Length: 458
Image (cartoon, rainbow, N blue to C red; front, top):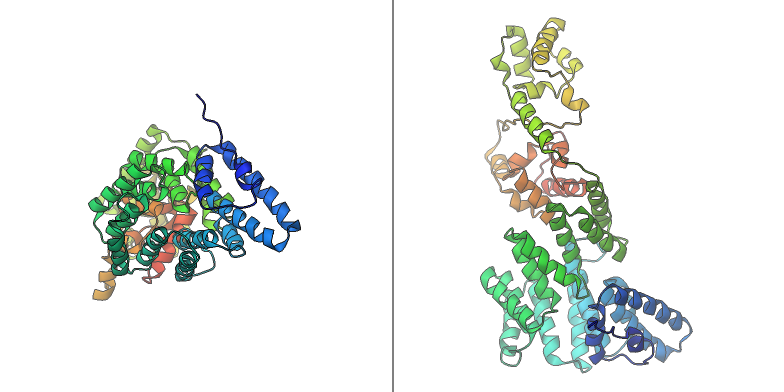
């Protein structure tokens, strides 16, 4: 039997007031799928038109409806603009939640304000909500969450301890306990609390997201995808859900679904330039072709390219010139031009012809990889004459860069474990890695810059 759709228009348009008890009905309606989302967008258009002709008292009520509706659609900045013009405990409570969402989304896109500003604004909004009559327990749980996000774990723990008995069957309480345990590094305990939250409230999207994230971190891709996809059913859908799910879809060759995630991000926040770049990367992947036979050929090419120059009989002059130019393998010769070789001291046409004969015998030519877009990998040699401080920096693990999920997984695929190994790579080589696009490259360059490091060739 088909479930009848909740009448969102009757909930938001036909009634003058919008109260806390209606929020649950709105969430239930949106969980019914696409038609309800489209219906809510039409309702927002209707309310916006009414706002233009309404009297001031009615305007405040319409702003409240617009604020809550936009919040659940993920248009958080629009929600904040409207909630600031509304009044009452419900408006203050959702304003606090909207500021928390904006603070958390700073890791995904710039929004013009510091994270601290959003969390401070959230605290003030929750205080107003409690003073004006919003449920104290709900407000205190949100305060505990903000304190945790601000790094005040002790204060957050104190609030949760006071609520333990009264909130024993509250899903939000178990979520906040789980988030605190995760912040303290106790992942098993965190997972246990998140699972309890979902058991009490299957639509608790924040707990579902954390369970997805924890599985993502452990490499359990399909379990993570399952949790993230459940989050999509229960608005509001955070940026983290769409970014992380998109990356997992790409990792598992579901490029069409990945592109859909990134399009939703770009549509929800037109100022999110990172989302736009992710859309381009994922759409480009839709037309990519992978042939295992081509991969085998590339592997065979790499073996040839790794052959050292010393394996061949060369004149003393040619050997010395190549040594001065730090050319050690046939692959290195594919990365220089003839004019660069001839520009080297004592390297003339005779030496050039000598090198060409060797390259032709291996079906290679000087400068070949430059013409083919640097499609081969080469062996790299560590830098010499480094100070102890410089060497210590290069020995740092690449995890110290705090890269995004996508960039971090690319580092793992390329077997890059330290900053020293990373700076031996060129930008072109990184861009050849699966799912590593211009956005990830920009991120890597910025993070390396914090250590005064650059990629090879930059």
